[in-house]
Amino acid sequence: MQQIIDRFIKYVKIDTQSDPNSDTTPSTKKQWDLAHKLVLDLMEIGMQEVTIDDHAYIMATLPSNIEEDVPVIGFIAHFDTTPDYSGTNVNPKIVEDYDGRDIVLNRKDNMILSPDYFEDLLLYKGQTLITTDGTTLLGADDKAGITEIIEAMQYLIKNPEIKHGKIRIAFTPDEEIGRGAHKFDVEKFGADWAYTMDGSQVGELEYENFNAAGVKIRFTGKSVHPGYAKNKMINTVLLANQFLSLLPKNEVPEKTEGREGFFHFYKMDAQVESTLVEGIVRDHDRDTFEARKALISQIANDFNEKYGKDTVNVEINDQYFNMKEKVEPVMHIVEIAEKAMLELDIKPIIKPIRGGTDGSQLSYMGLPCPNIFAGGHNFHGPYEYIPVESMQKAIDVIVEICKLTALR
Ligand SMILES: [Zn+2]
Image 1 (tube, rainbow, N blue to C red):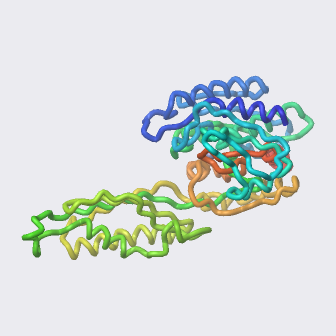
Image 2: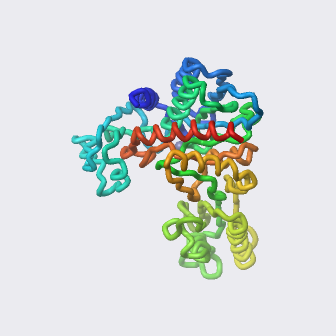
């Protein structure tokens, strides 16, 4: 257990925040600091074919130790942390034998991690928690995933009596800015399927995510002196509001859950003459997703007929798709993960992700890739924490999946 803690803390102390405003890959130079260290660590534990490319994508192999031909499987994690919260000078705290009460992260700023607010904490009474000091995020997302994959590989190397096929692992930059899969060389990776170790609570197993599109609606009107505007002015501030009011009122993020999709318009830059509205469309179901986009285009057409050609211009860009479409034809890859958990007395929690994952992009690039828990909670902020026992369980799941795949 100490070894897991030491490795995890070593990684979270290295700042790897990514940056959406950068065009390079990795998006920040500092991600190389951890990337180089990971390469050395992989060689040190005895991984083979350890490579890092020009964009800091790291891959390595654990060769098969059986004669039969079994599928090659992969495990993937990302080493960047979110741009939304500081990851500089992460100073983790270790809470041993957690007593179920408030944890003072930082007295000076009165930062308290309390089960009154974060009820999940009570699941971990008696366990060892790693928290922040209240001034940064922790980075368990996804340095827990990195730690778990390396520890699992080391365990398999040290226990060669455990039989497994060829295992490939990969660590990527820039997942938090949606680009983790962009420069991933699926062919070079050469796995039949893989798992991202990037979920939260113990038991989480995900293979459904949103279909996603970004929407920009531009309104072009006519500005005329308001005193003399009759039958002349076209006020796009009002047009934009009218447009949005025609969308289903209950299909918004704050009124939906589970597999319910939504329209979410989050930004409006409005003046009489021109208004730009920005939003997103999300839906698990592909047909409903397409229908949502069609509705926006339909309303735009109606406006152009009524107020004149080019009054409304709609730009819709697909962002990612539900990986379910790619995973369902190969459901055994989910069943293996489920079975691994059940054999370890872990209750699988299978639920649709209300967001996207790198795994969805990878699935559409030809590498089916469900997501498995890494154990952390409250990602992307100062209340992030992770029980060491949950990391151990993730390691066990990885080892068990390797075993089960070799039995096929
Ligand atoms: Zn993550």
